[in-house]
Image (cartoon, rainbow, N blue to C red):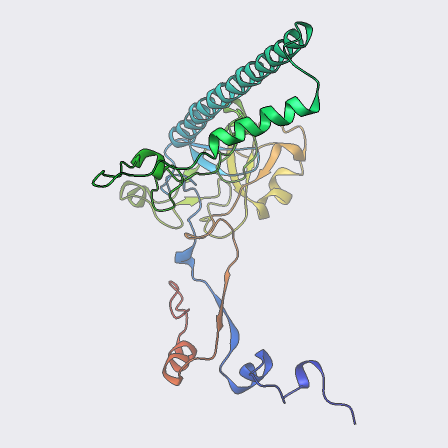
Length: 319
């Protein structure tokens, strides 16, 4: 009879993942994160605060104009410095190659001159004699000390190949710098971004008192339905800068292809930009599930993990 295979084999000298899971000591738990884990709508993706002068990138990310301009300017400065370092490195390489080429040319010229003047013999015996003579100079026996004479040691020469002297230990050459990309990029999407690509936004505030206190969830609303925007998908009408809910587009925008607030004509659906929803406070995505994998541990640790839960307002209990 053939033995069991794969996950049904229970005669191994260790516990498999399936055995741990069946025994209740291992498994993957999924929890839905609360609303406090997400950045509220209308907040700047850089400052994590309500945008005072909001602008939107072509990908739908909301920024405060002050912070995104500062970010783009700093990127330009950093990339210009990186480009200068790269150009200096290439200049050093070119000079080194030129010096090596000149040295090789001078060596070849010297060999040619000695051969022309008969100073360099082609006889193999002479070559062996020269090589042997050079080696003999390096392999001369060390000078013996007289009685009472002290041994003089050159410490600098002794440290050259010493493993225990870090300042003399040979290290690898520094890695070559790559040519820097001088284009500024969006901090969230990583795509190229120019100042002229930023689109101004008119966010309608529902609670001015909450805005004055520093902002909060549901602070901005749809310009048409006046419903607060918390987790719903919002859209921007580029020609007017008005923000509306996606549910309003079909009834109030796409019929006449005009902005329902300013009556500005829209060229088409390309003038409607879906805005990015706020990502979590600790990750750059909008996934609402958190996973936790528990291994074989003590009973106390597993009981504490299994007893954990996520409340509606936050996240706890994942270990």
